[in-house]
Length: 119
Image 1 (tube, rainbow, N blue to C red):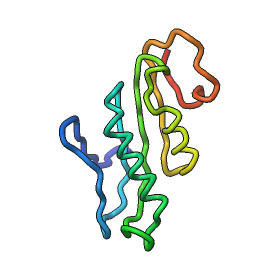
Image 2 (cartoon, rainbow, N blue to C red):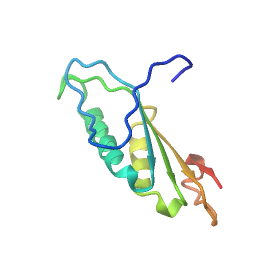
Image 3 (spheres, helix red, strand yellow):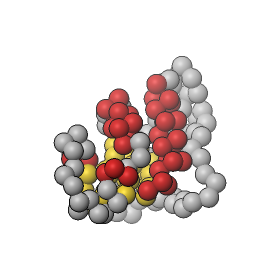
């Protein structure tokens, strides 16, 4: 987003991402903490499926970008972290992620270091 951008915000409850053919592509920003990653991880998997079946071969929806911001106490509590990194590598520039840890006491593994901020 840039200054002045219009954004829609949804917190908790019953939500999903199911774009329809002809819908304009959107830029998604997904924010999760702890186990709150579960529904957002499902959305990431759905977006990955949409990327695998591009326009004209499936639903006709042109995909925008997605940025995930995910916070937990430490890296061991970041659920699906390896799967999330795999999706980012599979769709470079289309899916990005930043992990944030609040109470990390041990060294962060080298694989995660570029994606982690916090203590």
